[in-house]
Length: 403
Image (cartoon, rainbow, N blue to C red; front, side, top):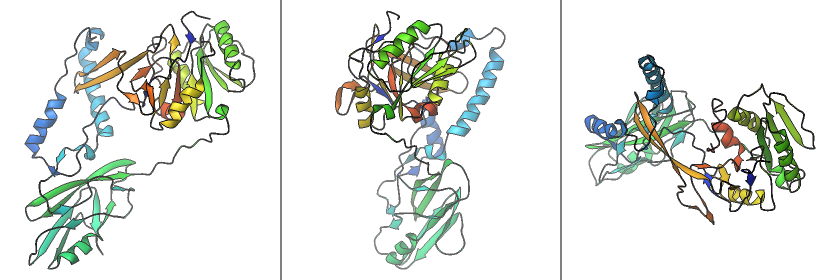
């Protein structure tokens, strides 16, 4: 076995909620009046200026093939435009809360199923007595109704405030746009008062549930990728069986001269030669049928201090976590943080990695910390990691990353 690679779970380390998307979008404060268009552009523009990469940053445009820069930039701009169409939402519109508004409306949590009629909760007017009360409500990606015909704008008028509020409670919204996830902005008006609130249009997701079974073997599968290291792989398997005799081991194998690995509860999947580490990870994890998997390199060795149970304890106690990393002899507690500065659509942004940086401790586990990346010895939540995956273009230079 390689001297570098004796993994030792010294302290259950850091956990990472899988970075599903480095492109951040600006979250709205939902109790709102829309900013004047000019002011909105001024606010947003401050976040879209070209970024400045500091220190020993690598400027990728300096590494593009000579004579191809303009064409590549043009293609990137088009792909970025399509990305924004796919990822941006009307719900990201910057909106501001009106002061002292008499209008009551839902500011968060109103979610509807596409094309399905749903009552709008919480609509009401609170004002001093008047001879007449009149409010309007309008939407752009759906229709409204109290009784009868559905319209994109509806006006409710009454001489009684109680009657008006009773009618507001019966207003329904039906989206007319089918998307798996999108949204609408409803505009609510009374006299000179205006408020805008978000409507989330979203199909409910089917929960992915795993039977945890009665022991750790029903919860965790060991996964690895091997290339040119069959002796080290055998050492890994032997050391694993000293502590976890019945746990399934999945091997992705892209060796130039494949050899069958024998043993109980071992699944070996052969790939075309030299496809690379991340391609192998994708293959191995695609075959996992347990709630979690433990990723190990093929030249690791389990010791008395390798306790999968401790990783599992952190993961099960903190359901929003996706990866729990350990430590490896020779690497220690390898962690890093990622900071992405968005930049503009033409030249892109700046991605910075800071080694050894952690955020704060995990509740209930004072020696565990949130961070962006961990060493290649980690417990992963199967469905979360599959949803992100690994870039198969990274074949060998990937020993510094988690996900």
